[in-house]
Image (cartoon, rainbow, N blue to C red; front, side, top):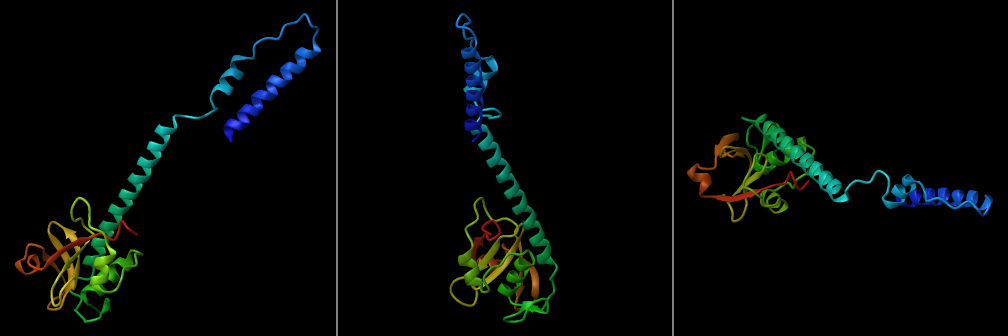
Amino acid sequence: MRLFACGAFALSILGCAGIAVAAQPATVSMQAPSPDISAWSASPVGHKSTAHTKTTHVWKFTSRVLARTSRLATELTHDALRFLGTPYVFGGTSRYGFDCSGYTQHVFAMMGVSIPRMADAQFYAGSRPKGGVRPGDLVFFQTYEPGPSHVGIYLGHGTFAHASSSHGVMVSHLSDPYWASRYLGAKRLLASR
């Protein structure tokens, strides 16, 4: 649109110059257009290198997304720890009692992120984390039935928060022999929302 406007402006100036020349006696020769008009018609006003501009915008957008995701992960891990000691209740989804997937669903809901209710559905809703497991990712285990049947929130440094049937909401280590032998992997849900 700018190019069109600049071209129209240049043509109107050239047209006016032509009319002025036609009104003069035939002995006066037409002068070359002003250097400004040549510059305006050669390149649009105010345009910079579009490749550089696009790269800059993409980089800024990516940086904002990564910063937001990192901030959300930090908030998520802090929210996860708010419920330490909450009792285990099979089917529980509130601060009065949680089961493992009710706990993760509740913590994500506090961040405004809706995730499925059951551990296996949470497993299939997420994506494999690129670059390794990070705080805020969900970690899954095969416990009482085949497939993902237990879930927790990774906190960093090999630890995760989860609702355990024996201790309620607690922090455990992935390296603990019980959890290490049942570990299925991590899934990321924050970046995909």
